[in-house]
Length: 444
Image (cartoon, rainbow, N blue to C red):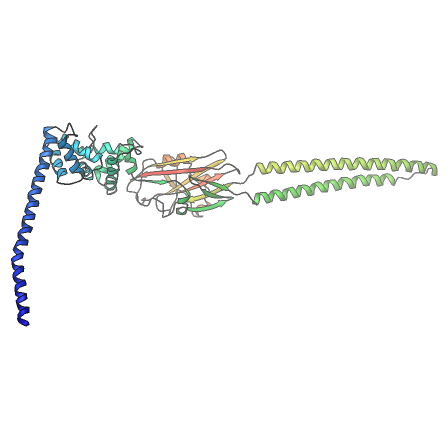
């Protein structure tokens, strides 16, 4: 039995030795075939690039050769992009090669877009070529709302390079945005947008001040004035009670005066006959009744006048309330701008400020350690030792126009690396409210 097993093992070993060379040769043949195929493909690619760029001068990108080059580079296969890159730098056929790369990038070909961006990074003169589709400046100048596949690809790539602080990309983005605020460059340009909608409410520090709250709607913030059972109304009620009390006192005093006069008349005594006394008594009773009725009518009339005047004054007081409605909010660690390299370019505010309302601002550049106001020439620190909720914003704060002017092209000073703001909404009547829809800050 042992002999048979050994024989079987020897036979299997012999078969493996015979098959192994065959497998190796098959692999070699397969690799060789793929190599030859790749070489033929590369040669074909090279020929198509030459036909498209040189023979046809890339004047007809719908020609069979150009279409194959565009398709292969768009899908990043067979080295078509590398061939185009080679010709883009030869100084003779660069215009044709770049035109093809621009066409491919415009259709969303990432490899072609990468080539155009790298050329800009290496040489700033390659960033802006007027009127050319392959110019990086051309993409940056596209309108922010334009629909373009290549623009979408370029936006993501250029934004990454911008955030990595690549010089030629940064300078072109800023220059283009400064020229056209509606361009794609301004979307890339580092910015912070506060839309003050209800979803952002939790990111702010809300300080309730007096008689009001900050109301976050879908479109902005305003004062939600709460006048129910307020101190002002209670005070008015007390005033009305005091006026009614005074009126009652006046009525009582007048009545007592009239009765005193009547008593004094009755107390006069003269030596007259009994008949005369009876007649006079009758006449006196008649006069007393008439005088009493007259006095009652006059007192009632005076009292109605006083009460009517009191009610009118109460209504007038309610309409012309002296209450000030206000509330404060500040940025928090979650939504402030906590790293600015050099400069704040703008602080744009969309707001409404009706009559009898105000919006006041303060700015902090050091994480809310200090608060500052713009005096027209520089930022000066204000005293916040009593806590920001106790600051007199009306006296110390800036209005919206002053804040916009103060932060325009402001270069941060040593120790200033962040931006927080505090804003107070103020209203002096129960109907009107100021509101802020959005704030957009551009910085670098």
